[in-house]
Length: 386
Image (tube, rainbow, N blue to C red; front, side, top):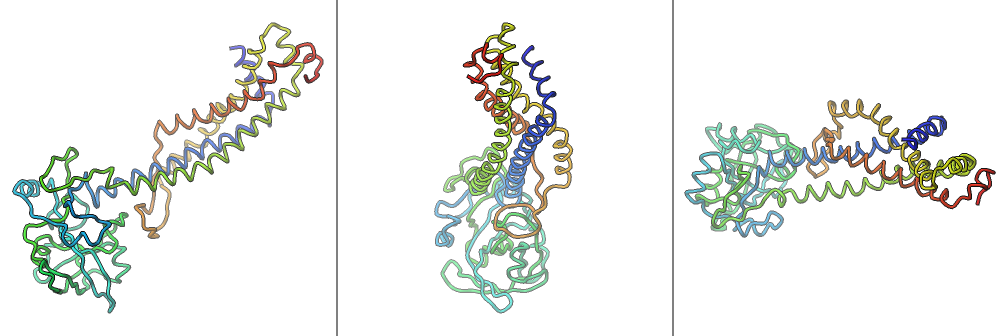
């Protein structure tokens, strides 16, 4: 307790120098929490949006299907068993039939993925209900990115050409029934959705699907299908998040080092200027280790004050940011990111950041304080450096 009382008095007595160090350290503390909270918020929103629009709780793939290999799409489909039909009727599984096709919007040609999805599905956020409203022709839905690329809008007709199961080219006009807005490029870019039954008839693949989207958190094994869990399906997003965190460590580390360097310099200066005080402590019966502890605690206390100061302006800032979010605009950057990101500040993030700052400040305070253990008390009382 004596060490803490002396450290408190010395910090308060240092005046402006203490508050300058505390201000810089508190800013580093708040910035670390802000940046990591923003990345964690992006991760949560990205995962939630991808699940809501594209993958749900997992997917079953045809063994030959690979979304990164266009040559696997044509033959990557198979028939649905009675068990799958039963689960489809209960809304537990949504089958998708995927084939390559070509559209001709505004007089030019563009390759797309044509996806057949049941119009009555409710598992994914896609507005598929409009696919069953048309009495004539084929209705289709596209995403906002696809609409911007092709300059198509609701009510427009566009010609689609494809190869059926025999390799024969066929073509048909479809009507854009809806343009949906989502933040998941994988459910939008270069894709057109039509009704599942219509798609099967167009391709000649009766009772066939390429992938099965499931709502089950604990999926069962289905013969002839490979299950892909969320870790696999969201691997690209997770890698992106980890890379952003790694890049942010550099900025956070530089700012933290500046604050710690200021504390280090302050401690070195204190030991140089307060030699008589150190000699007095030893003359009064304190061991060298106890005196080292006083100066170490004094330096480490900067981090405690920094946490308190950071909380004073950081908490209102974080609460305000949690309400309004951080806007990135409507720019399409090709990754799953919402127009407005709401940071997520977990208890683990706050505690780990506090621990990092406190341990770092204590360590840089201890390093110069080690010199005290080598001081001669008599010379220290005279104010002479050994």
